[in-house]
Length: 108
Figure 1 (cartoon, helix red, strand yellow):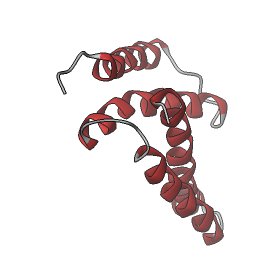
Figure 2 (cartoon, rainbow, N blue to C red):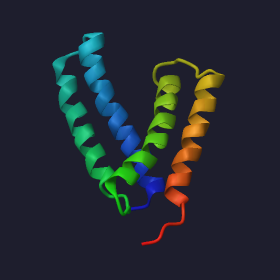
Figure 3 (cartoon, helix red, strand yellow):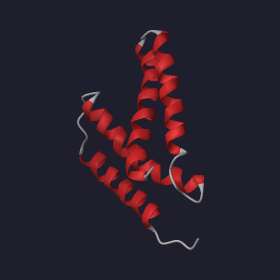
């Protein structure tokens, strides 16, 4: 699977899984939230392992930029907190960094 497909799906799974734990721990929701949260986190790990990369660390590093962007979108769309200009600037910088990591010419 290509990174352009895997990374957004992995970010959604990771954020959903982490939010389920956050909701249980910080918002007082039912412990039943943990079951789908753990499934989402396992799906996240599996998805990230599907990225074609010569090193896991490189795949994880590039994913970090996408995760940041997805987290800011989550904050806006799910939590209702509109990103400010610093959120947008920081996210853009991270996405540029992720693109450099993924697109850099490398000798194999």
